[in-house]
Image 1 (tube, rainbow, N blue to C red):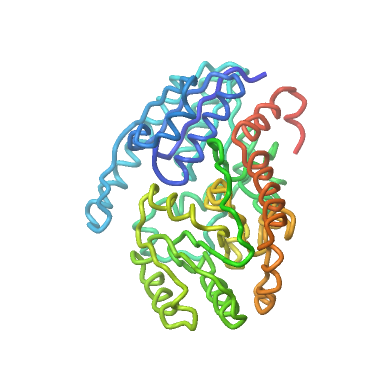
Image 2: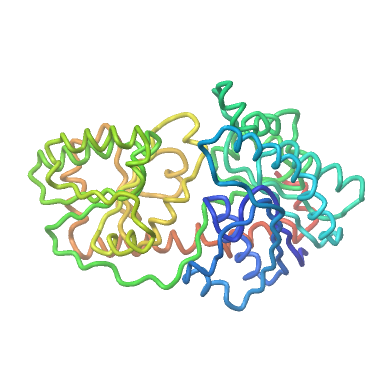
Length: 408
């Protein structure tokens, strides 16, 4: 039976990008399961008190954390980049020492590791063996290895080659278990691990407000993102085009950092020249508060993923964030989306070759009863499959009986 958990690795805490959000939510999930939790991270994140919702969620749970270092956020200067890389590798030893020093080394302790660095992970394994620590090691696998890498990427991003190393030499056997963010990842590597556990993108939710009332006519669609190719903007474009050709009364709100990327600006230009350009509202680089306010006027949220090899292994955090907005999701049936979303039950699922039928597909969901029924099921999905307490509980349960370690 696990009594304490150390969440440790290469991420910022308590705030930051997707990695810090995943670790923060898991930390709270473990705490809600009644185990003692501490966090040891490489980077110092911003102050969590800036996010009132997160502060409320953490009330009553004491989760101490320690950050090893801070890095310059300057990304345009190559010399700063190189210095950051040198600082990263010099900080790895301190990170490993801090983890092993904080560990009790008993069999009722779990060390949950995040970070695709062969240097970091191999040092942890060596220290565990050298010190004869009985702690259980779990490694969180959230992305597959890159298939195409340029020399520039090797220079700017050492993790590219470091991450490729951990997928070789049967490396995953060194851990008592591995968690996988998607079923596709698990299926690809299940034969290389001692025990596999699915932990998708997760999010804690404050009480959800009532959804907007449907009038049976208006179709308010929102898209949150940067119009990058992985978000499949081509499919979003086709949806808008077909709704316009069908004479549908609709409005499309595009929110995100699309002005920050060349591909995003190119897609914005294409949307501006479309036959439905008058139906589009743009919100460039909105704050979290602004996004929340804008989405209050929206009934449907579009979230697509482009059918590509690497994309099938991922599970976007944005999916869960959008479910939390209490709006009906329009999604394409690809990758792990198929495991969770069912058309007409908890979402609207469309395929690229079905876009010409989007008018008839979506009309049924403008009915108030149908909309609320599907929305209710999508909230059940959110509160169960993507709940941190439930997913942290799955990890703890895997070690509740010693014999379970023998299972895959």
